[in-house]
Length: 349
Image 1 (cartoon, one colour):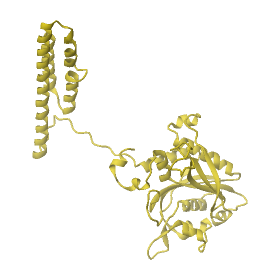
Image 2 (image 1 turned 90 degrees about the horizontal axis):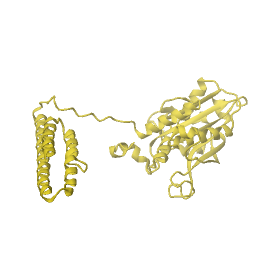
Image 3 (image 1 turned 30 degrees about the horizontal axis):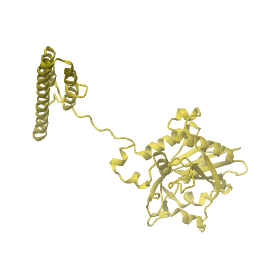
Image 4 (image 1 turned 90 degrees about the vertical axis):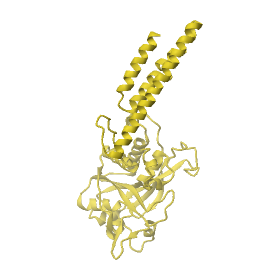
């Protein structure tokens, strides 16, 4: 009984001193929660003699109701003060302020920063270029002649009354860089690209790419495979440290022959599907593989376009979608979600 009287006095003092609803909630849990002091007392009275059990039980329940009523009264008073302050514009400086909500990076920005971090650790520099390009940089210098049917694959957006266009890829950045810098070189060019096409779950008018280029005296497709294998292993590993030390799930890749005007030979790079672990599912069309990038050894005509002798240099180029990387990493099935502006989606990252 003495303990109950002491708890009543203690609880009343603590409730009076509270400054916000969070502190009130803490006090409620302290006394009336599942492990609260009053709850513990009520759970122990079964061990008392009948007469004492009835008396202590009655007093404990009275104290329980007293604390509950005091908390409710205090909470109502706080809400009334807050509402009054909003109506009159008067600020009670004794009430703790609300912590402002901090924004965070868009998932595509997070993916781009991760990609840049990995390639920079492998000796690549990050370079940028204009989003509005000329036909020379976007097509001609990349060994795509004006009458070549390959141009149709890029669904180009041309600017009205102008010979300029919105870049269909970040490859023009590589051309601009090679014009001003002599090999050997290692670069990646992340950025926004544009194509005139219908939008659906896997296509957008505006999307992000990252392209890479490595040129030296003796660069081979084997060098490319090793670098891309390392990139995928680090990017899709939950822990970069574990990946570097040989931990985590092993990412498998395969290279298939393909065609691109600016590389020869050209190939597509597939990665084992993370959704089904290579067993086959709807995401990978039951193949167990996901197409991730196009690549190849730089075509001799591209070297000539930037004033380099193809007999002296060799290297590889590659390109992949940042959106596709993000979709694979976070298991997102619709590219349009990234551009929807829906905070319910964006706040998950």
